[in-house]
Every structure is written in structure tokens, then in C-alpha cells.
Amino acid sequence: MTDETPSLSRQMFQTALKLSAFVVIAVTLLTAVWLLTAGPIKKAEKQALIKTLQQVMPADHYDNDLLTDTFTYTPPDHMNTDQPLTVYRARKNNEPAGLVIKTVTQRAYNPNMHILIGVDVNGQILGVRVIKHAETPGLGDKIDPEKSDWITEFNGKHLGAPPIDQWTVKKHGGAFDQFTGATITPKAVVETVRDVLKLIKSQGDALYE
Image 1 (cartoon, rainbow, N blue to C red):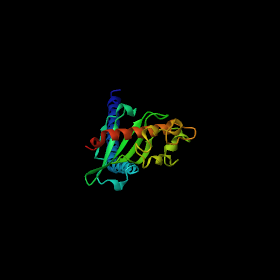
Image 2 (image 1 turned 120 degrees about the horizontal axis):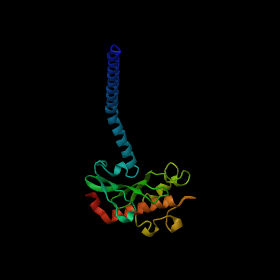
Image 3 (image 1 turned 90 degrees about the vertical axis):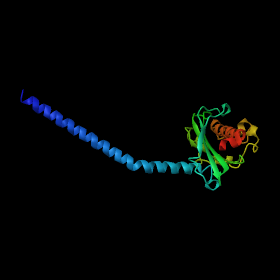
Image 4 (image 1 turned 60 degrees about the vertical axis):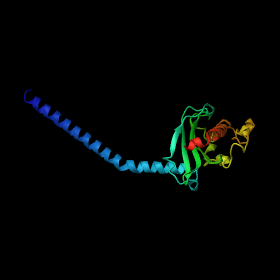
């Protein structure tokens, strides 16, 4: 028994050393992979975000960096969301050129629909995109430009065209089409865009400061 005890202890020690070495090698490899991929991943994410922003704020409308000229804004009560807005400021030759506002609305059939609205300096819509949603496939998902061109109805519109009381779907007396079998989803998008336009109109130049 005396001879076996040191042998057993030695085996346990050697096993512990091997496990420790394995852990160190694994951590080192994982760290190396992260260091090698973190930069490219971050760059790809940045490029993807820029591409998305340019769907609602065309590149020829600005010459600044939208991703650095941005801030968060606490939404007013009329916007029916408790999540802060993200405001991207477009400038050209150091002059205000437009705004892109990302908001999250709880009005949709499924909550937390993420919407981007791009508006020029005169309050005219340059583009609208729903960038994240959980609406019903085949019904509410017609907000996606890949499924329907409905979302392009907003291009060129502003609070006066149509009049503010018509910023809802036709079923509710508005100027915008609804989807066959689905009213809640398009209504949510239209009214959220309307509320963003109201915010921009009320805040004016303050959003560029």
C-alpha cells in the first residue's frame, strides 16, 4: 500500500498537468482565433449597417460618417414605444442633409418591430425599411421589399402629402393600402412613420445639434 500511494499521486499529478496544458492550449487557440476574426467581423458588420442605412438615405445625399454622427433620443409619449430612438445625422458640406431614425414599435401584431426611416432636410421621406420583425409569413411579411413593393409607397411622402389625418391604412380612413387578410402590420408601420415625421417636424434643427 505504501508503494502504490506515491504512484497514484504521481499519476494524478501528471493527469492534472496534462489537463492544465490542454486548457492553456485551448484558451490560446481560441484567443488567437478571436484576434484574427474580430477585426474582419467588425468591419463586415459596419459595412452591412452602412448598406442598410443607404437603403433609406442614398449615399449621394451625404458626405459625413453616419455611424459616428449619431445619438440616442428618448421618444415622446405619442410614439408608443419605451425604447430609445437611434438618430443618424446626414450632412453634406457640413450642412444638414437629412436624418435616419431607427425606432422600435409595439403596435405590430408581434411586438418589437424595428423600423428605419430616412428623411431629407425638408421632411420628405427618402426610404423606409423594416429591418427586424416577427410578423406572420404570407400575411404581415409583405412589409419586406423582397416579398412586396408596398414599403416603397412611403417614398416622396411627407406630413402634408397625404394630410396627417390620413396617415393610416384605407380600412381606417387613411391613404395607405393594407394587406389582404392583414391590417395590423401595415397600420403599425404607417403610424410609426407618421409619428417619426411628427417628431422631426416638432424638433426641427435641434436633431442636428
